[in-house]
Image (cartoon, rainbow, N blue to C red; front, side, top):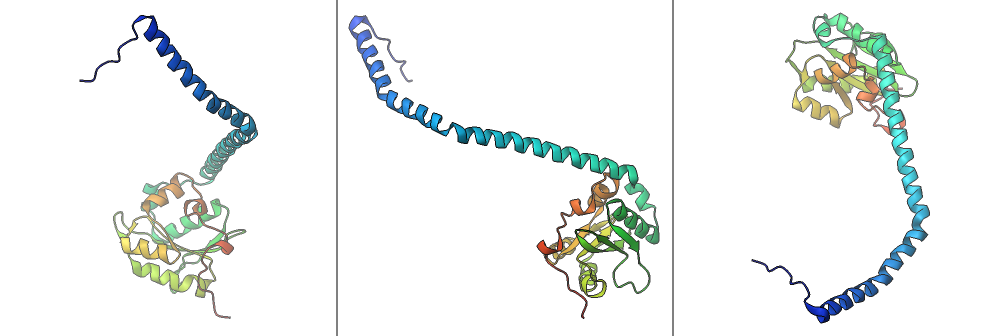
Length: 224
């Protein structure tokens, strides 16, 4: 068991301890003085960093408030529950996706029909370009496979001139389908993402983090 340090006894030991303390303070004085001088010299930098932190926090809070206001405005325009979406027919589901795109600021139309070449809704955004949606309305729990991703990748750009390709389902996707889509720029919206889009008011381009054409991988284009 460690011993507790013995307190100085007698005048001699007290004076000796005081001398050691004074020597330590004298030894530390230059370091303390140097730190003080550095603090004085560096205060503009510290003040700038503190100011930047305050401004950054204010900007972030303003952006969060703006995003919440935008979501509330979108929900006031159109809000679809997953339960309601599950009850739709295939054609109604396509119209619902068109309406959600329009709500988010796209000009869009439903084009799905026999021979539609894997495009059910086509939209246009002033910044993000042209988008193709392939709708897969299914029973809850069903999963869309990779073959759908292959079809959309093969036609979105070449047949429809799209900058963005998205497959949307009220069900789910197989793991391979999601991985393949992520590798080949075919976006996917499963049941969880559809809830955020239709029920919670997230814009599709925010949900999928879509970028302007210059900064993203381009899909194949139609032959001239």
